[in-house]
Image (tube, rainbow, N blue to C red):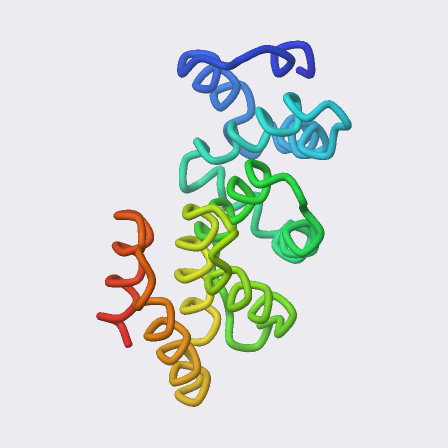
Length: 170
């Protein structure tokens, strides 16, 4: 599988890898693919993460067991592309009230307010902050204040859209 992730992937390559790993009978292949997200070769790791972002909703449920591990990786990740892809995977997962991680909430709040962070990461952090904080009104007030603070700066269309979506929910 690693050989197919070494080079640039086309849409058909991604669909082929998704088809190869789909279904419960292929959970061992999903695990192999997940281990390749940790590969020392940046292209291999990024491509493996990219494939996971194309999983069907049913196959994506396999990643729910990796929830905390993905969060831990996000907290440490320096590569913006890998971070963006992992945040994208987390956006497709449920956040339960009982299993909220304050370190990840803090990470999202810090990143969404950081003008040096890529726009896509900031937009994802806005959405992820809301998904985690929605259970507590006092945290939602904190999020609203953070969002009002960043509304004064020039926002990209994608960042403005994420901002608007979450403000509507607040």
